[in-house]
Length: 481
Image (cartoon, rainbow, N blue to C red; front, side):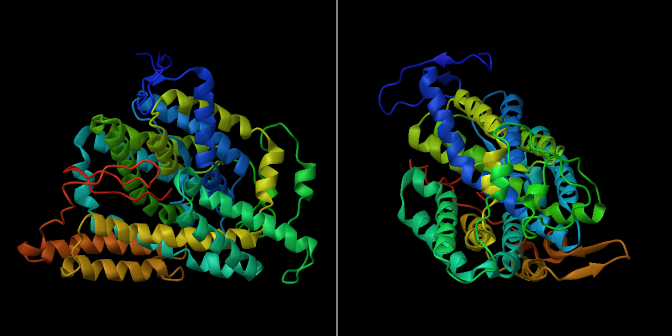
């Protein structure tokens, strides 16, 4: 089967459509558009939080998805949306007076590292990675990445209008838990709409609480209907979203600083776990052995991140939302993902659309990030639980606890010279990884027995969150985009 030639099928109700098959093009286009909606909210929200251009993010997500499908030879249906794993690193870079180009440069290097890890997995198997990053370590890194961001949510976004932030947060909680199926999966995006509308209503009613209007659409009026995102203004320092000048960020060439690179590298650990987990979930749904594709998928995600950030776009990752759509529809055709990628690229060429997203009030982002950052952190605990990590062992408890404390405090710093220091996430990750392996070297033999995950995972249920199946080769990963 050519990757660009799918077998046309007309399945009976409930019958699955395999990756190498497709429905009629009219239905395939509809399914592709649905995949865009599924990843839409997070793919737009995360670039804004990272101070990057939303239009460029969605455009490059489409290009990265096409590259991903080519690298995995069309055997792993998946969409590459914007990754949340780098949000903490981006915040740390801005806190050290870096700019958008520093963020994308650091993430590009992380993408190269992720691609290399994918090659290692492809040629040597996941056991090599798991030996270095067992579940207790992976879970700790994911946890400290999420919780390190707490001051950004509560100290940067929320003060802009605490009531709007809290109401938006409440709306996200209610919709994420109370809504079922597909709409429940896009609760973050729906929460953004609720907060956006609420801010607009508060402006109309002149509700006090902020200086000036909460919603400013002057940039929307000036934006073109069609065109490529403009170039980033020179000399930008700090998160332009927090400075109220996100429209100044567009395409740009990355800038490379070693100290900034070290701040984002811990996210690679989270992405390896995430990608492996997602491939396992797709394999379970399609009843296909995708183990030979795991390394390719991880490497493809790294390549997608490199391509996206090379022009100033956002980092990429496979999306659980889109896996959920496949679980609900039982349509695994990669043709739908090619269509989704083309739709995303087209949307990225509508600057007025991106200007509307860029005008999201900071307090709305505050409400969303209160939920998102906490979820990212707790996904680390989810990895521990699903892999039966035993904290009665000092090997698991002592070095991990020390690393987490260092990692969740942004101000924690270990300075090596005037130009180089480890802080926050980077410092915590080094202590978690190095401390664990140092402790393992001196631990009694009975404490070195690895933690074992349940042998019989629960298969995915359509309309419910996807759980990554577990096998002997890799531990369960996080689903934090």
